Length: 381
Length: 226
Image: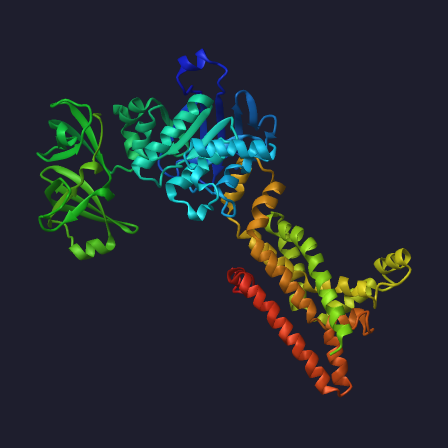
C-alpha cells in the first residue's frame, strides 16, 4: 500500500478543521488492472489527473458507492462510507456524495426544474420549489425552467447537471470531466460559478480531467494517477512541470518530448521561439514565463503532427520543418513515422490511408507541420 | 353477433391485462435487474406460453384448478364453488397464457433505460425502488402501453386455453372465439363470418394503437432479438 499523503493546503485545513475532509483508501482488481490509491482531499478542488484508463473513474465510483472496492476505507468528514474491515458498504443513495458524470445523465422525461428538484424529495413542495428556483438562478438557467434536456444546449445542460447535484448540498462533490465537451469561454464561466458555490459550501471537490489546461485553470491540488497508482501530487506547477515529471508527460501521450532552449519571446502574439532537440530546428510555441536562453522541455503528441510531401503553403500552422523519413512502423491501425529533421527526431502518427496517399517510404523527403498550440511546454528535465 | 360473448371477452381481456400490468411489472423488474445465475430458467418459463400449444397449457391449468388439486380444493372451500369452468378460472388461465406478452415488452423497456440515469438517481439520494418509480417507469411508458395492449389483444383472441379451462358456458366462459367455433359447427357460416370480421377489425385497431403509440417500442419487443 502506498504511504498516506495529505492533499489540500495543510495550513487551511488546520485553520478551519470543521471543513470536511475526504479520506480515500481503496484497492480494486479488475482483470489485469490493479487500483490502489490512498489520499486525503480537503475542502476545495482536488484534481484527479491522468490518462484515460488510469483508474480515475473507478476512484470516483468507489467514493460514490457505485462500485465496491475489494478493500480499503472511505470516509467523509469522519463518517465512514465504506470500510472493508467492518464490512461497511453504505448504499450509494445514502452517501450524500454529489456525482456529476461526463455525459451528465439528465433525466430526459423531466424539465430542467424537475431535474434540479429530483434530489429534494424529502422537502415540502414549497421549499423544494424555492431551493431549485434559487439554484437555477445561481447557475443562470432560470429561463430553461420548463424545458426538457433534449431542448437545452450543451453548456446549459452542464449547468443543469451541476445545479441538480449541488442543490442537494452533498458532503463531497465528484466531477468526472463534466466540462470536457465545452468550448473554453463556456468552461471558464461554469468554473467561476462552481468556485463561487464552493466559497460558501467548502466541501471536498474531486475533479477528474485529462486536460492539461484545466489543471492549471483550477490551480489547486493535483493528484496524478497512472495505472491505478498515485504517481505524483501537489500544486499544478509542482506536479505538472517539475523535471522529474517527464513521466507525467508520457502519461499524457506525448510521444515527442524534446529538450528546448528559448531563443526569442514574442509577447505581442503570445508565443515564443525555441530551438529543440539536437539539431538546429526551431519551434514557435505558446508563451510561458521564461527568459531567452532558459532551458525547457516541449511535449508534442505524435497524432497532433502533420506530414506533407511538398512544402505546404497557405497554412495556419507556424512551424514547417523539412526532414527525412527514417522508419515506418505499423501499430494496429496507426502508422508511426520517425522523421529526422536535421538531427531532431519527431514521431508522427498517421492513418493507414494517409500513408497510402503520401506513398511514404524510408528515405523520402517530407515536411513536419507543427501547430503552435500542439506544443506543450514543461520545465526542463 | 353474439353480444353476450363479445362483452364477456372484452371484460376478460380488460381484467387479464390489468392483472398482468400488476403482476408483470414486478416480474419484469426482477428479470431485468436480478443477477441470479439461474435467471434464464425463469425467463424460459415466462416465455413458454409463446411456444406451447394452448391446449397443453389449458390442460395443465385445468388440472391445477380442478377439485383434485390443492389450489382447486382451497378455492372450493373458500368460495363454495369450483374454479374450473368458471370466469375466475378463465382469468387465471388467460393470465398465464398472456404473461409473456406483457412481461417481455415491460422487461425490454426497463433494460433500455440508460444505466447512467440509475447511477445519477442513486447519487442524488434516491433508493433503488424510488429510482424505479421515478426514472425507470416513466421512461418505460411505451413498453408498458405495448405490453398492456398486446396482452389485451392476445386474450381477446385466445381459444385453446378457454376451451380447456372454461368450457363453453354462455355468459360465463363462452368468448367470441368459442362462439365462432360454435357457429361454424352449427353450419351458421354467415353469423360466424360476422363475428370473425368484428374480431379482425378490433384486433387491427388495437394493434394500430400499439404501432401508433410507439413504433420503436414495438420493434425492440417483437423485432429480431438482441
